[in-house]
Image (cartoon, rainbow, N blue to C red; front, side, top):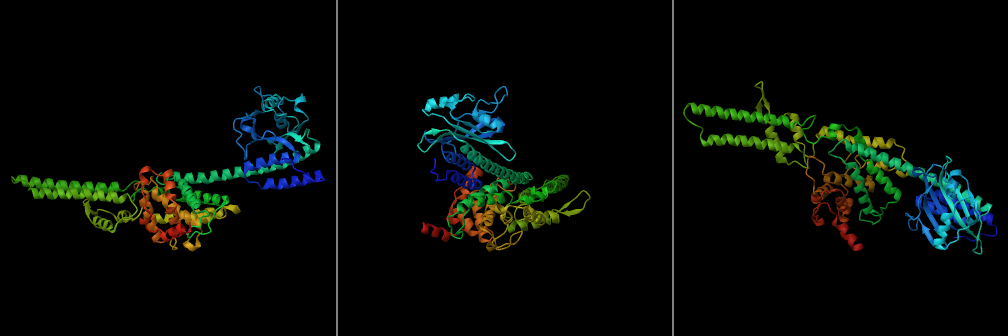
Length: 554
């Protein structure tokens, strides 16, 4: 660990200190940063061993973060073995709440001062019984100590460095001198700044992540029927992006992601529906086609009950008239009334089914709805009315889902609000594409999507990935009341047709299927009965040439 310095050791040490300071400020990984601090301190002071402690305010104690000893070949923490429970926490205060000043590192932290010891075995001011016990177990001889507290910008101690056994050029243990103390304190000051900056950045990121997830959770909680959508879309988005990362899949050549790219896409996925905070609750929560404040299918059921009673009255009147003549209704007439009653039951069942919504309503069902709407019933005032009002017919005739055209426009408006909200936020450089990614998941490859009508060529790969992820989650979600939980084969078939309709990106869909991203997601989020066999060769929209070319390359 100790390095050979030039003919001007002091100058070289300061020069090295400056270089270390620059490196510390550039390090983003907390674990690597801590290890760099201890390694650098030992290098600058020629220490054979060293320990880095972190202050734990919640327990008023010091935690061993790193323990190094070259002679004993100990390297715990950081890139070495975990520290684990080998070293217990060091309390800063004793049980009677008095300061724990008998232990040198606790004294240094509590007093915010450096402690320099020539020989621990001769020191009377501190308790080195633990050190002596360690030496007895290992055969080591702990001698010179240099302990330095690390203070943040508010003057609070956040960590402590303890250096042990300075070695001279002959490999002999000597005491740390004033120059060692000065250079170590300078390093500690720079290290404290680096640690504080790293902690502040991490805390800000944690706060930002929590804020985005709170927004997503708030949106999900607006509707039990779309609950967890905002939480699951990030999962499938990142799974798909990771599958595409660096493999040069046909049509996606050159796509790769750094850690910052992943974080940017993850953030966009969490915020992709943030505009729904202004979408009216009754539209988000519309679980049937006729639902307003109540489900109007019940009103229609009441009309059918009136029709059934009218039919029953007509039958009874006819039976009474026949009885007065000493006759009874013949079987053909009774069958006629039974047939009419059964037809009423069948028509009502059909309307209830139509009311639940679904992925697609066939033309023959629309024709039946139109014919039924023309049927009549007599209200309490004796007025004849159509069985279905124009509004009821229009809503029951919705082909997909439960939203009518006006409601769908309002729902689609959430993307306008999403973009407006995100574009107002001062995203830092590494998050500047969040609005683009989040705002593109309802665009289509042919430019017929919304809100901007972008084509495939105008969209980035991450934005197109989010489009596939959003559709897949929506199709397979098991909370939607208007459809049964969809099996994988059906969902992928529907997505394949969307590819053929120029809705979804063909290459990303093919990758999604080929790399079985759908299966990884299903094992985590779907019900067991939804996970069925998928035959890739029978799915529409699959780019089989791309898969064959990939096999040929490999």
